[in-house]
Structures are given as structure tokens and as C-alpha cells.
Image (cartoon, rainbow, N blue to C red; front, top):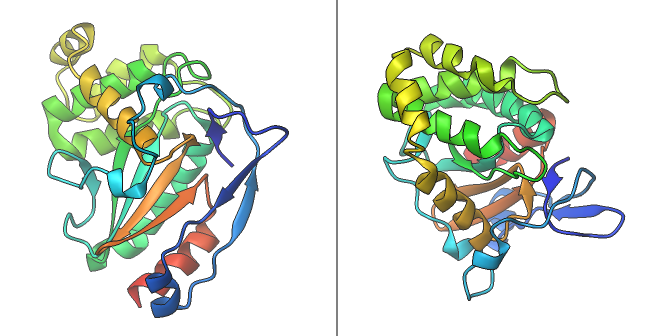
Length: 239
């Protein structure tokens, strides 16, 4: 399941876009999964690149990204997410479990990027900007602690209580006054907007939207795929 911002009639279909080399090399099976969820016209759609959306447009993962695990892992999962999306909460828990299992080997890592959907979740851009303030002040580890709390401290169908964000920032190791000044200045909204534009450029139409990078191969996972299917997929890639 996912939250989408492109009208698709009565339902939304998601297809794993799997390059032939991966299919042949690892014997993976492409599955189509049908997704529901709310629908929204993309805030960024009128700013989309002139070229057709393509995975070739994805920004390379760099030290500026939020990476959990080995930055040089041969399998990198890049997720575009909305902190208030219920399906993103589900997928966040799945990814936590996968990184706990596969991260220590250094073979699989997780990159988090922003795709807030404000007409569905009005506070999502604000939370994304707040998370970037935590990253600025506390580094990568603080960002992930903050993200885990945002997703973990609310119910599946609840929105984030933004009044608790300063507490999360403190718990993540960030000085409260510095955090509040950063948020007040909207210091990192350009980065949030850049992530969202990147998502549109590669064809994302909802959250969560993930791309598996393995060498020059790219694979889309559109929606909150469950742990069992993700494990089968990752096992096919790393073994």
C-alpha cells in the first residue's frame, strides 16, 4: 500500500520495474501488487523536468544523504518517504528489520529521502524540515533516531503531534534551542524540495517509493512491500 498523488481511477497498480540483468542473474520474479490509498495531485508536478520521468534521473547517493548501514554497500535501497504517511510507517518498520538483519554484513544499506504530500499530510513538509535540522545539528545518527521516533511514536493511522518534535530532537541528542532556531528559520526546506523534485523526476507518484541500486542496475519498489517479500528479494541479490 502507499499514499499516491496521481489519479488512477478506482485503484492504483504498482509494478516492480526489474532490469533484465537482475532477472537473469538472480532468478527474481517480478510481482505486480495492487495498491489503494489516498490520492493527491503532485505539488511538484508543474515543476517536473522536461524529460520523461526515468530512473536514470535519480541523484547518486552521496555523503550528503541520510544513510543507514555501509555507504558503500553493493545493495542500496533509496526510499522517498513522507513522515505522516501510514504506509511509510509500515515500510519504515520493515526496513528497520531488514537493516538489522543485513546491515552488519555491509551488503545492504538504506538511504532516506523526502517526498512530503502536503494535501494529505499538511505537517509533512514541516516534519521533513525538522528532521534536516536534527541532521545538521546532530549528524546522521541523530537523524535516524529522530526519524525512528517520529514513525514509532504515533499510531498507524495517526498524524504526528508536531509539538513533540522538540522532545524527539532532544532525545536524539540535539540541543533544543538550536533545533528550534533552525526550524524557525526554515533552514533546510530547499533540501526537502530538492528531494521531492528528484522523486518526481524518476517517476514517483506516491509514498513510499523506493529504488534499489545495485551497480548500474535499478529496481523500483512502489509501495509498502512487506518484510517477507523484501527478504526474498534481498536474499536473491546478496547471496
